[in-house]
Image (cartoon, rainbow over all chains, first blue to last red):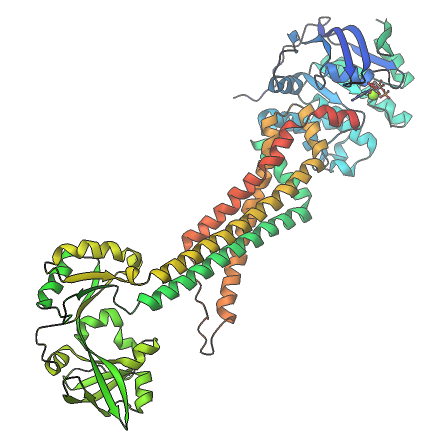
Length: 241
Length: 388
Ligand SMILES: Nc1ncnc2c1ncn2[C@@H]1O[C@H](COP(=O)(O)OP(=O)(O)OP(=O)(O)O)[C@@H](O)[C@H]1O
Ligand SMILES: [Mg+2]
């Protein structure tokens, strides 16, 4: 079995994620509706920002896009595949192969080193790392500027280093989509700029679709498209290019 | 599989203190289980050994009024031919007698042996303390307690009086110790022909004593049943030690059952211990499991992470437990000793039992990981992602 990551990415400009009438209601006896009839489509290779006040529903929306959470009603289509009838295993495989996550709180495995964390999605799929994929992981580590600390345990790295490790990890499977929830949330402005530059580079080099939730005005202003969520509804959808 | 194993071993390595503690818990449980098992089977073995080791296991006796068996040589021959499992076939003529000594009399049991054949049962050559076996009709061997009672020693002569008023003088050639007081006190061993002659019972014995291979000692009833066809005289019957020692056997049985119970509960407590620690470790690792699931690990793999932890802990604990158990057994035989240096209880260490205990450790630890494994499989990554 050739352990190579062969992808047939959606042609540039084709939609990679389509959300159709997404509603999310929490709770049993006392219900809270968090998302109202969200219709959204993201085109392949674009660099998108989602902004909005705290509690507006951004993370909820992103978790639904990433198939980690299920909408109360509505459908999600990822890379042309409807997700609502997929089994847990099919969703796991879909996430593994198509989506790279960068969470706000880094979420590395503290028992593993930076490079092992980067390799983890590949190991989940294939069990063992080939020489090629190790070389690729080292390349990604270099790309995010972590060459010196690549053998450090996740706990032995700074916040910014952990965040960059998470970016490299999100890239290892060469996913069609990267979902990032406040990836620079607790970084200083210089590091924020570095992380942004890295993501932008990757977007341009690999044509990876980025969807980034951010509070950071600078980042938001540099995206191709800004979507603002207000009280669970899209209040602004601005495409720059 | 491989990733689950890799993560499992990394989880265990990154928390060495907890890992060592659990493995030690398993090890102590298993070593206690091994120790108790070996102790009980050692006890039982030595008990059985003293009961039947140097005694007749299968005996042909007569129900006739005179209790005598004629044509015993033919019977002995056909018994040997009938069953190859018999390791000894020895005819004996037992008759009562008295040793009158300074107003006191000791009642004895004159036992006429063919010493060549009886050796396979009684191992006299090893039981003899001083002197040698009687070979002539006027020679005899007595037990250590009778010798003390009489103040006799090898080389002395003893006059024996029997019921018909006859007297005969024997030369004591040796003193034996068969480790049973009544035997040492009453048995008066001489040749078969001497007793036959003294009681005018030429060509007759009172029993044919037999032994089987010690490994099949517990099949004595089956062997006895197989010997039935050789008996044509309706007044003869075959007994075996199991029929004669029912209370001993039921005692041993009860002991075995309680030994198994103890072993069972030791293992149960080990399992509960591991299960609860692993269940806590699922909580400790729920963040990691959540991340792994977000990255696409399947539920089966995520539960394998915990099964592998159980398996690895079981292997570690099993090996350690074997070591501790054997060490415990060894020091017990070294320190719990009689004045002469022999162990109070000779532990019986059975290789199969050790292998069984080892697998018990591995299997039960893996089973104990089932509950946490299920928890891990069910964990929803969104809970972790949403709540940080
Ligand atoms: N499990 C839940 N049960 C009930 N309400 C929930 C639950 N999870 C989230 N909410 C509510 O949903 C709303 C949206 O939450 P969400 O985390 O999506 O906000 P957000 O836009 O990401 O905010 P922030 O910028 O602070 O991260 C909030 O009002 C929150 O209280
Ligand atoms: Mg949020």
